[in-house]
Image (cartoon, rainbow over all chains, first blue to last red):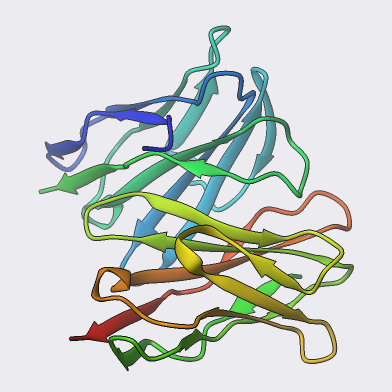
Length: 114
Length: 114
């Protein structure tokens, strides 16, 4: 158990809908990262927040947004969902934002868009 | 741009035999290198990382990895494989120059045969 929690574990929804995925980092960690894992794209970095501020964006679609709250938990919002958004979504946390820091991953949210 | 390659989709090894999972990387500056393991329906678990110093890094569950700068490689090794080591292994790299996301390889499936 990494100490990173994600809810829900599974999510089934329809195209065009909007969902929110939630992540709580390990105690004391200030950074939260979001990743998408799909069979054809592998593990893709989406976005990084550090202490409430957006630090970097990766391959995140405009339909997707995220935020980190004062209690350091983070939410990833996915809107206008398409079939291709079906994937595993992971969040990870680290203590700081240095490149050498280890990221600890949550168990993921499996999203299925029908 | 940084990249990481895992040239083998799958590695099969007999229980008790040594195992190697290969990883090569490309960065502009110096690399930080990571290995993670993913069991079915689970998040990624951190195994070990290379930051600086000794080229041989020891990690969790008896795994180790050797950093070879001239060959730009960071192969994961274990002297004696266990059936329970069967999983998906990811190599990851992060450039020390500027802000760089973590780039993950596509993963190598390790199958340990009893």
